[in-house]
Image (cartoon, rainbow, N blue to C red; front, side, top):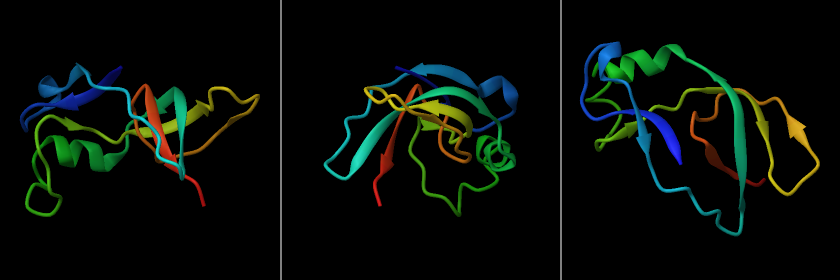
Length: 95
């Protein structure tokens, strides 16, 4: 699957579309398909390295951009939900 991420800290020029493995859900998770997303202010702080001493990281870092609309595959349900992750698919913990 594709995801927006970085392989080093820097400005907007370090953003890349990366090929990463599609996550597999555990028993208490579901996999959602992301339909639209946006940028959260913390993402440019992570990208720029401003939070490198606060948030542990290992490159490549997949930026957790904000989801504005997603679909749950195999269900006849779509829902708006903010603050998830700009991955083609994302795992969500069931409550």
